[in-house]
Length: 267
Image (cartoon, rainbow, N blue to C red; front, side, top):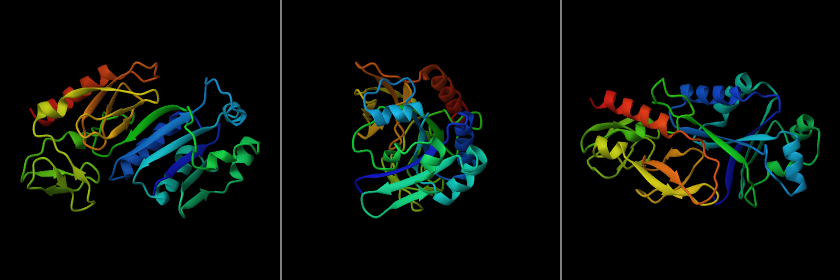
């Protein structure tokens, strides 16, 4: 499945706090991690007319990354975003094609016929402003949904010790130290062997589109904050770049929260 996307498009009257409430509701109801990426075009200098129309209409969308069922998502959208204030779109380049409630919602809400492109796979990169919210079950209650760290991925795990799966939360035992596969969801984790290794933050250079590569597992990571966590292996990453990127500065708050969590988990 080469091209696949899931997103919500929201009405202009939905307040930003509703996005945080949706992420918090997902964290409370989900067993697996979900990341919501909020996208808008505010303040962007745009050349193409259809982008300018979307900007003037205050179009905002939420990219959905993670295993959450459409049924649960629909159940939570109405009370948190408001009935009739959202459109769910999921599509791939094969047979998947879901649009709820219907494509005409765009014209009813934004009063223009020039936004149909929002329902298609992006053929070219769009320079959205992006901010992520993190629905990570298992995180401390004091960590908000703006905390880009999944605490389950920081657990120190040794062979023959039970550990929670970072993906689904089920506990299991593995004989291997470097990699272990969850028998419940098949996720292959790369556990840390010590508190010091798990707490280490590595510097990662970013390209002009805020993408970097994790030094530990070599997976690509998209940054919206100065410090992010690789959601493949759990390494904490700090962004650096020669490009002028709009990253949310969170290094001080992250380092303090992580230090407190490790002192409580591994006194």
